[in-house]
Length: 107
Image (cartoon, rainbow, N blue to C red):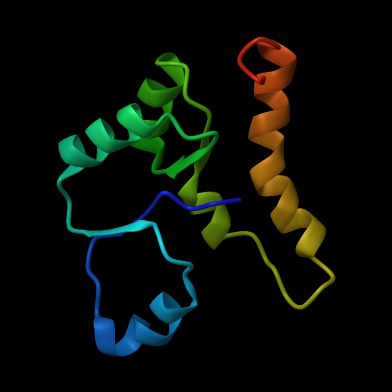
């Protein structure tokens, strides 16, 4: 999995600096709420999976993009290795659903 963009409403670099250092080179780090620009970028990139809020998921799905609700990541307990499969499932289920519903799009 390769992140194309990581976005947040507010980026406190003093607190999140160590986490940002863990990101591989490449993804755009976007701060703020310029949703139209973010949507333009996601439409241009056409990623395999877009993790976004509920309000954006349905319109993006209607455009043929596969999405996952970001809020599910907040409420999914992942502690140590026991729930690693649950976390992987959060990302794989939308991709499997796309493959089942539209096999040509999954290729």
